[in-house]
Image (cartoon, rainbow, N blue to C red; front, side, top):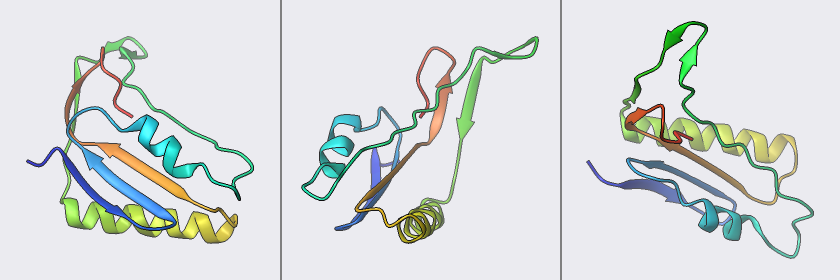
Length: 102
């Protein structure tokens, strides 16, 4: 499996990763003269839900369809809120609760 599968355009950058995400690169992509602010969300794998311990999470997808859907979500958001740029990253593969899975 490739480490990175992406579609990077002038306004929208969507990507799937097997390993860590490119957070600093994403912030650099979002910055620009017309950008008034940058809002980020980073999800993590929690160690338990209620009383049930989370040992690992496994993410699997058909990458071409996942990228197409991610791009559609990002496009809809950019139009709805007049965003200059949108970055949408997601991890795939297996992640333990000690690792960030955003």
